[in-house]
Amino acid sequence: MWFTSFVAVCLFQASIAHALPIFARQTGQSCVACHAGGQFPELTPYGRMFKLNGYTLGERTIPLAVMGTVDATKTRHNTDASGNQVSPKDGNLTWDAASIFLAGKITDKIGAFAQYTYTNYDHQDAAGKWVGKWASDNTDFRFVERIVSEASDFILGVTLHNNPTVQDVFNSAPAWSYPYVSSSTSAVGSPPFTTLIEGALAQQVVGIGGYLYWNKLLYAELTAYSTADGIWSFLSHGNKAGDLAHPQVYLKGYNPYWRVALTHEWGPHNIMVGTFGLFADVYPNDPNAFPIFTQGVTRFRDVGVDAQYQYLLEPHTITAQARYIHENISDPNNFIYSDSQSANLKSVLLKASYIYQAKYGISLSYFSVTGSTDSAAYASSANFSPNTQGWTPEIFWIPVQNIRVGLQYTHFTKFLGSRSNYDGNGRNASDNDTLFVYLWAAYW
Image 1: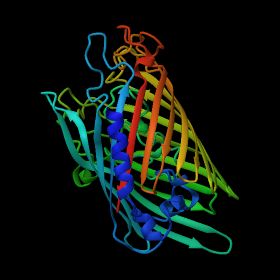
Image 2 (image 1 turned 30 degrees about the vertical axis):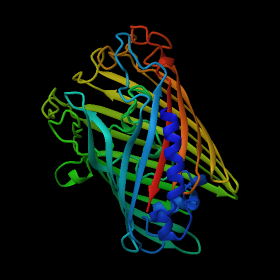
Image 3 (image 1 turned 90 degrees about the horizontal axis):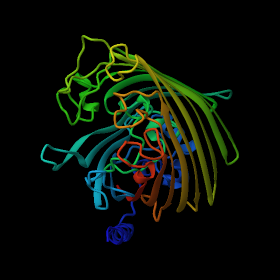
Image 4 (image 1 turned 60 degrees about the horizontal axis):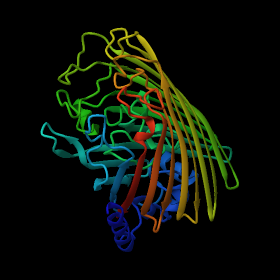
């Protein structure tokens, strides 16, 4: 029933939404010029240059856009050993979220990308009622100077943003990596534990950094992150001390991030290989979500390597990304881990996709999280393990430039350390397999 309703919504939306996005309006280009095969947010070389130039290419225009998603999630087995629902909204057609964007050219050297999002099913209150929430989302302000001569093309930029790697222009970096659309209501549709840089600080921090891009060959960046509170609280997702639904992550001092990448383009091909890292010291919160500043910190040391390949020649678009992150964790006060004062997590993501005529697409990804065992940090695992692996195939259709309809399936080969009975109550990894059907649409 929900699938029939979803199709009806898709057909209705496809007939009425036809306007171009902010950046397409600003540059006079189609969405395909910036996004590989038209698939947002995956960037082409032109899209990366647009972002590196501080969103300033083209002419100033109306800097407003809106975006929304309608979706449905179905878990293979949605009841636990006690007969309780695992995901309360399972099988329901839901209006998931909507965003307002203010973005584009401010001056010839200053531009911005600012997103404000309403999440319809943000959290459940004490009575079990779902509560929606408006809050800041991905935000990136830039100042850029470009120096072009016969011998070189040199871009120097400064970025102010609120999510580590949201400023990155490659889709192998965590903030803009696959899956580009996923379920926000499923309790088991993705790995339950990931490295810090893969989202734990999103809309929790303020980052100020500088970058350079030389001759479309070398990209380098150095950024420092601190807590998004005080004058920077407008960059936060609305998190604050004492809010159990949205506790604030507090960092000690300024925490460094670096990024180096080598890029090369030839004909319809382009490739990137790179490395990145984040060193962050995180204060603990007490049971009431208030920070404890007097008992030390947990130190996270995340180092990653990544690569990306694209083939862009109509009617074909091929993209592939690979990423590996190794995280060392020092927890001398056992704020997170009880069995040891040190731990590690390792994350792998591989993804490939093909799009025909910028309309019909297919993707396949493999994900893996492995790491040290611990009886406190991973108490929901019978093996006290975070180890989770699986595959995500997806098919999608882009009937017009600002609409995407997709069907995604996540299959787990391992969940929290085991293929079978991972929780000690008879639940298997494949019981968490998740079907996700979505409509993504934008209007300007």
